[in-house]
Amino acid sequence: MTRSPNPELDLTMARIIKAPRSSVWRAWTDRARFEKWWVPAPAKCQVVEMDLKPGGGLVTRISEDGGDFVPHLNACFLAVDDLSRIVFTDTLVAGWRPADNAFMTAVITLSDHAAGTHYAAHVMHRSKADRDLHEEMGFHDGWGTVAEQLARLVEETH
Image (cartoon, rainbow, N blue to C red; front, side, top):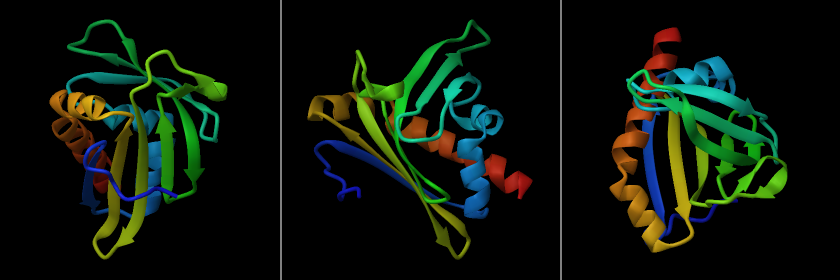
């Protein structure tokens, strides 16, 4: 269970997506769909690993401005609750191995809403400095942009 956000350590964002939870879930769990929205355009995403189970890896690469793909995220799924919650962290990598550069744990929740799906991200950091750095790096713009891209993808195909 996730605790209430701690404003000293956590960043959050939420939005309503006008599509059923199953469509949003599929965009999160299907590699080809995930690649279409996971990084802010015009950058491109490549999924290297997506093993949707606790202990499974989530590894992505990013290409900025059409350049070579470079490492983006190397994380481990902590929980995958069908149609409702995905928890991942870069504190661990696949197989529960400790990561070299721990930064955050993200809890993505999906719930029914009269207009479709309530989509929320709760991103936890180990320190205020990490939280502040993530905010300065553009958390709200970046996570907001990819949530908008996700919404466009699933609303168009719904």
